[in-house]
Image (cartoon, rainbow, N blue to C red):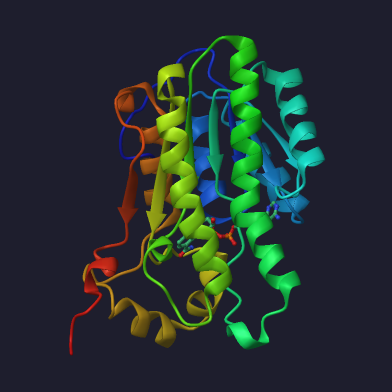
Amino acid sequence: MPKFDISFCDQSVAIVTGGESGIGKATALRLAQAGVPVVMTFYADKATADAVVATILQAGGKAITAQTDVGQEAQIEALFARAEEHFGPVDLLVNSAGLNMSGVMIQDMELAQFDRLLRADLYGPFLTCRRLVRGLDKAGRGGRIVNISSIHERAPRAGGVDYDAAKGGLAQLTATLALELAPRRIAVNGVAPGMILTPMNQGALDNPQALRAKEAAIPWGRAGTPEEVADLIAFLLSPAADYITGTTVIIDGALSLTVAQGA
Ligand SMILES: NC(=O)c1ccc[n+]([C@@H]2O[C@H](COP(=O)([O-])OP(=O)(O)OC[C@H]3O[C@@H](n4cnc5c(N)ncnc54)[C@H](O)[C@@H]3O)[C@@H](O)[C@H]2O)c1
């Protein structure tokens, strides 16, 4: 059960990328529970995406899936066309699809790896944001965007040149769009999670000892859940957050504040 009620405009329609897993999945469920029709993308895992939609429909909500590689322009066009055909103009967008850092040091990193990660984590949000704005222009409406970044948009890790560059770029894409789109009443915010228990942290989920070791580094003493991030995203998308744009909300149990401690 959600911890608080949240309400949306009757005409709102959401696209959530990466809806078959982790934060995207929790967000699709949270928005549908609040009465918003949701179009959730999946990349490979059709079975899980279908199961999420079945859960939403069973609870009386509205949702469909769309297989989408977010880094491919034609597939983003097809995604929005499918969404508009089913539910009408899309005014809410959550960019959650993404790949994690490769762990490869720069001297060994193939351009293809850098390209693959940037396509998913940075080109994807560029393409979806652009298409959302074009659709809202036609519909003559405002809207709201949440881009899921990471605390690594600022805090670098060795072996993360692909991910950290993409998330750093996403932070500036978010800020720039917020400025550009404010006069059109399109709000653009970022959410920067720390360690969240999703398949992106499968190693820790599968190994309680490794999980405890990682959680010991988090001042709050535990990792976060996808549902906690989804609650934050739902709030930022809602009319209650009307005056919030151009900011990134960190949700990390103070992990990012531990930089430069201990030595
Ligand atoms: N889990 C964490 O600890 C954490 C921390 C910081 C940031 N994030 C960010 O949150 C977002 C969601 O991550 P998550 O933890 O839910 O991970 P996840 O791996 O559970 O979900 C990510 C989803 O994105 C999909 N995806 C990957 N490349 C894609 C592409 N090119 N096109 C379409 N879909 C694609 C994957 O198939 C997967 O379903 C990501 O952007 C991630 O970088 C996660």
